[in-house]
Length: 252
Picture: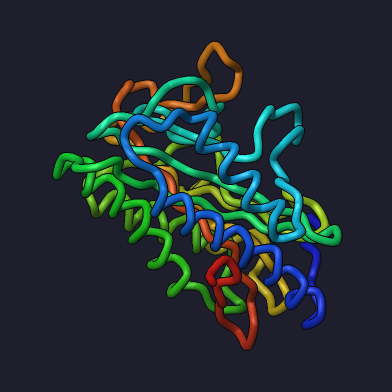
């Protein structure tokens, strides 16, 4: 496994791409309200990215038809924008990528539409809290499997389970680079596999299910749910390893 290392200049360029993603997510979070269609939300996100001299990185990526993944309620990731109008009480995952001068940014949030249930608040908090816990946990020299194990431990401690078969990933000149970073330990031993090093840039993205971890891809061939059919949540940041710790790139 060859995990690319980025120079200080590379990371500065990636920071620009990721700040645009953060600005777009913050903009959409403020603007989304009941009655808006997913297609409207996607168009707003794409236009905002383009207005910042970047390209919506997901549009056309592997054949995905839009610039914003809009994942409603039971859909945890990769939801395709449609004519569906979000309603009071829905939860909505927004996952966005940008490309500026050949460098990629990537981040995601899950938001409530209007007033949501306490259970949904806890579900969203689990993905967000897991993300920030994982970022704080990272130290250069530890293994990626140790990070995955800690993410899983934290999710389980909150009464939820991680979605399987999908994972965080490296980021750089490509939207997905090595390594893959599951939110759960694969295999029995966290003390094996590649180590985290200064200069690595990658995305952590906890994807949270309520009861069952197994993923189900819907008929549109993109939308991913849990086999339990219950609501899920998703949060993501891009981080760079600088001075032996993780610094978030996808913030304004």
